[in-house]
Length: 126
Image (cartoon, rainbow, N blue to C red; front, side, top):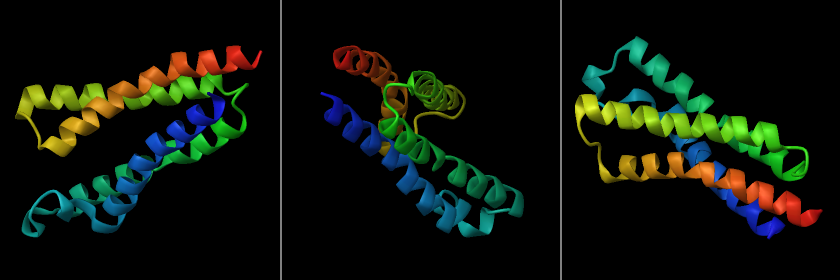
């Protein structure tokens, strides 16, 4: 159960890392036509792309320090869930995004399930 948790957490954290790398390289032109890209928009997109890579590095620390990582895990996962809630708010303002973004919302909010799973893993380890 412990190893499964660790692998699942790293896989879940790798997804935003990989997307962050793509967005860091491609910038705002991945989302809007290149002629509509402004320096300000591209700068923000690349900043958030780099920031979205952070959970993967935190997850590496968490899996190596699983028994003591509860507070860091909770803060990280609740922050990720908040990003999903922010995307839901965006839906109310601008409508539904494509299917890939709907999947991102589900995953981002769904990561909070790692919190009780982590507690069970640590409790089972005794």
